[in-house]
Length: 121
Image (cartoon, rainbow, N blue to C red):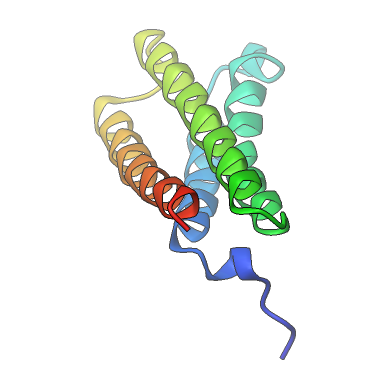
């Protein structure tokens, strides 16, 4: 069995990775002309959430770790913005939209809790 890095133990990282997979699946159905537009933006922003969490765990100070948690939160808000736009462009059905929003809300709450704990150490 291989070594498990600290970010892999974070529930919020696991959730954000699941959000990436959900958004990849959802954007598969976007119009082909959006391949280099909203599809690409959504995918990159969602990956950024998980990546910032991973990068933050490698930092030495809690302040640095909190900075990357903040960056992850910012990327998550970018995802939410893009999901709202995709919904308004009728690229996403209501049920899928609500599912994604629920995941974003869950992750945002966990990110805020993580950041607070990092700053209070």
